[in-house]
Length: 386
Image 1 (cartoon, rainbow, N blue to C red):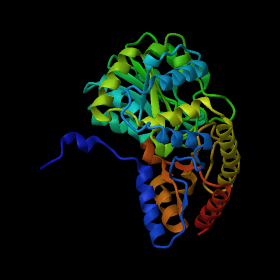
Image 2: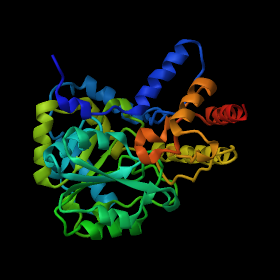
Image 3: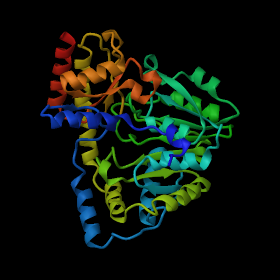
Image 4: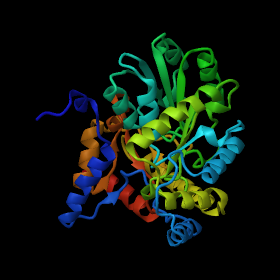
């Protein structure tokens, strides 16, 4: 028996491969500092955990409606309406298990073989994986360090064609921590407004920013009706294991996504939706505290990276990653990432795990204690000295 040929076109996520290698070293007695996984190291807020426990006791353990419970979708619609300055109804909201279905399902619903998709590179690897899996044509746009890891707008414009069906934006951005400037968002909207194209705006880090809040392209005039907003609870509320996300999109596309949802997952777990409702409508102090701590870690870690020979690193504006340029070390991204894991006990990701334009960079997650981040800097310094 053979797998279908399309399985050769689907990729894996490099962070989990590195995590597996790091755990194998730990099993041999090594102490590894984990800076590879994009997962907040904070506990899910107490009131959210309590809401889930209460929901279990109250019997929220059965099938729910495929799009998500109405009161939960109402809360999401109100939150997105308030934060993006657009009108959203529950019919625009699809509740799904995690954020990735809002990459997978809309692409399944929209793309035919040969359709072109513009997306950031380096970027979240699942974008490119799903484009290839569906037989669409990838059109990666490099993110430029000299533009704080935003698009070259001239290259973006030149990449648009009659075959462009989907444009993917991600701000705050994984892996660079960059935020697309509002003037660039406006310029991209001007290029797309009159085209037959849909925008997938990955805003999963929408609440984790340090100075200037990110602007959603859905907030631009005429763009809400052609934008899919991807957001969720994993990053903002430290709920990665709860598998709870959502998409906000035009009703005609939400109906298609719900059709795919019922064919694959039936529904999102009922008790996790109760927890998500508590997260959205309850106290937000934990989010503010977590973001403040990420800022503190960012400042210390970036300062330390810039003191290492061969490294230079911009101050990321959002998310919880730093993306230093390591070209001055003379090593490739993959070589250095592997050496840091095996010789220094620091797990990070090669920039090429996020696409070819990530060569010359590493991604470190600062979702670890400040003490461990400082120790990681010391270990990297010792390795470079050797």
